[in-house]
Length: 218
Image (cartoon, rainbow, N blue to C red; front, side, top):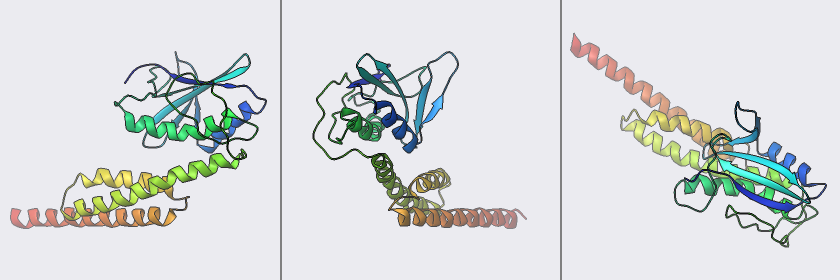
């Protein structure tokens, strides 16, 4: 994965910085001030660990985005290495870039290739602050689905006595809680319940094994 930062430059508007602040808040970005490195906004959701910075440059506003931390940033390009995390982070950032492309009213399609961007704003619908929250919730619906699928896998592994199912259970809870406030809430709750059953099965297996060792050890 190449080191560095990807960037897009957009025409500056009096709404540009407010749009960025709304986006950062809606998506849970955290402001970081690391030692011996540039400050940045950190994003984590279990599928990627990304960073974002922005700067007003003349008549434009430049957004820098990368994977990892500002001290050792990784370019969000189209290369194969880390492609899953890169594509996921691009999808997270897409609503922001769509809004910055035309802060007065467009939410069209912005192509994210990791290079400089001064393209004309595409046609689309009216920009709304709520679109960031809606986009975030829609993205987190995927986590509810992932959690449900993983919970089924974890349940099977637990029934077969594989102890490494514990790692899956931890991830199930994490993804389920990310998806608990979305329209896929039912799947998230189901994942939590199934994960709980898996834990009970593992505990029962451990007790039975301990009892067997104690019995035959006598």
